[in-house]
Length: 190
Image (tube, rainbow, N blue to C red; front, side, top):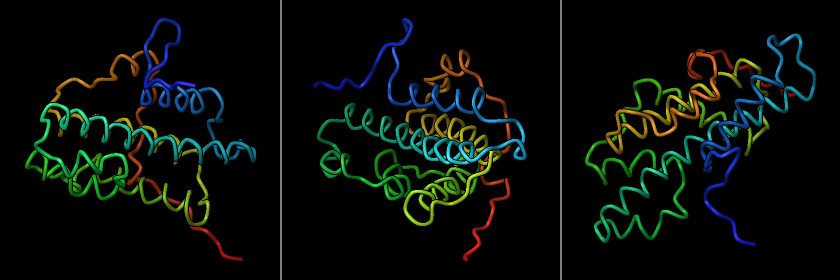
């Protein structure tokens, strides 16, 4: 079976970022309730999935942009070309932009500051304790992922318009707090 990097849906060509975004946007707008007190058990699990998928959007954008930079500069960064398929998100995010374009991400400014908080919570959810995720966190994670993806593309490629604006217009989400500005529930050890 051959897996392509894009798929079609109702005459739109989708890729890993747009397809994941549309699914997450649908979960938030069509499946998750408005208020936490309306949430059933499945909504908590779906909120975790939105959080994990939102982080995935940022990873996809980061590596799409780096691949484009490497493709446009063949042979200039052989170490990165050889390691891109196994490069971890955090180290790539922290180190590669400065080495490739001479300018690191400003992780003290939003939305990238919140993107790092989201990455930490994603790691806690996936690797450590399957951290609790609220509806507010789900919404904030997707909004943060969209804004961070936009900032990553702008920083690395100098693009003024976001590659996925057409997707956001067709499948909008509400503006909400960035992930770093919301309260995260604490786990209780029993």
